[in-house]
Amino acid sequence: MSELVLPLELSLDVSLAGGKGASLARLLDAGFNVPPGFVITTASKSLDKQLEAEILAAFDKLGAKYVAVRSSAAAEDGAKDAWAGQLDTFLNVTRDKLLEKIKLCLDSNESERAKSYAEQKQINSGAVAVIVQKMVPSEISGVAFSDHPVTNSLDQVVIEAVTGLGEDLVSGRVTPDTYVANKRSGEVIEKHLASSQVLNQTQIKTICEEVRLIEKSFGFPVDVEWTLSEDKLFILQSRPITTLG
Image (cartoon, rainbow, N blue to C red; front, side, top):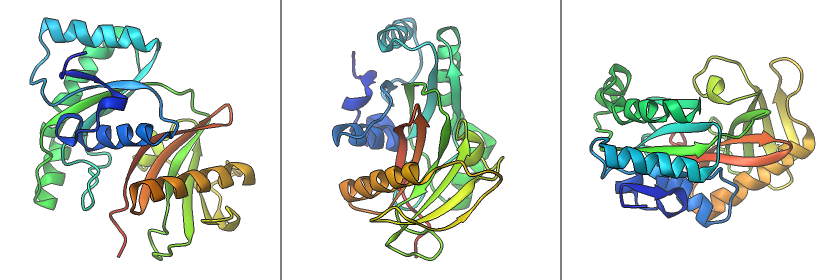
């Protein structure tokens, strides 16, 4: 692969892979279970025939029927501004739709939603890379905060969980189960259920332990997107918690 298309595990340079891509590469480098993929870097200003062929070759090498295609801006997932949900993401993308979705991601920092966020925060997204990752057949998905984002408690993990894919949760379209657990033991301190309980105690403990290890690896409180498939935990993203006081 050229500098235009990099394996995800080699995409540690934020200026090339964007904040999200570099974070995933760092997670892989630290040994966390991240779905495999590749990055179309910020060095690719447009998709010419040669680059399109390289992207499709990388897709074929991945061996996936379906992939997630995600924007990754240079300023994304920083210590102050997350850009969460502001740039485009497409799930369950097949080979024949791949290039189309990549182009939409490359242009997503020009959307009205992204421009409004940038104006509100008085920042710029910077150049946009695109992450392509093998889709995980998600059974339960969610987010977890290594410190309590409301009370600022450093010894509590907050987990939000829904059945299926986590995009509806991230976008605010569904109400999740919420669990507050002890960071060390994983024991549930309180829970608020949307309907029937989504996670069992073993799964909550597993997520707590993984989030604690990610926080230790990164050196700051983290907001982690995760999914469970056949009771195996996959990490989909980690970013700094930007709401702590």
